[in-house]
Length: 271
Image 1 (tube, rainbow, N blue to C red):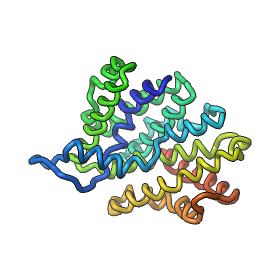
Image 2 (cartoon, rainbow, N blue to C red; image 1 turned 120 degrees about the horizontal axis):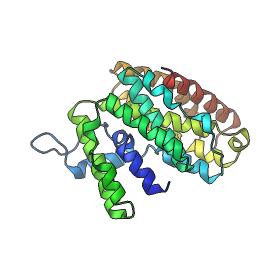
Image 3 (cartoon, rainbow, N blue to C red; image 1 turned 90 degrees about the vertical axis):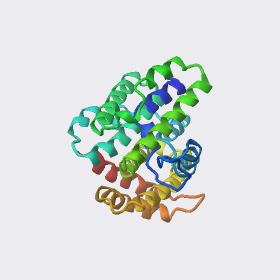
């Protein structure tokens, strides 16, 4: 699957949702809705510092890390998530799994995770945040870069607008957190030989700033019980990364990150 196809699948599913939910200041019209210009600025300022799972898995692809079939969250688990919190955080997990499968051209898994994410969007009552004709429109614009960019930008705006209108910012933050945790988990649970590749140092170092940003966003809505629990689960990783220097990371710290990413990931995917 090429990058345009990947983007279409994500935008039609979870990633269009993940970019929403960070409520910040900006000019609004008479209905209280932020202008598209302000939304786009806020997305760039508050969300883009969090790298997408696609960027993480693309890094793994560049260092020739092999695809591990059973590393992702089994699609069969989706029906076991019955609370809003579990559905939201695992929508993020499955989004990262979709990125991973797409990066490595695992077509069967791409279809599975696309369907799984769609099921969670329905369960979370977010179908109105996504243009029902978005997938077909993107297919029509697959070879039209400008058209594709416009469609994706509009889907980001629509999702942002929808979730903020409905006071569901914490839900989207849980999606973001799930995606970030799964991306880190995948990165740290490749083969031991690849994990010891010097390029892994760069990959793990690149996750310090996103974690700090994520924790800051979660702290802003710490009154939400589900968010509070997730924030607490992230604390061990945060403590490790707080001791990681700007351009260096020890083997001990890398091992600790690997261990803690597994602990929090198991907590998240457990029904």
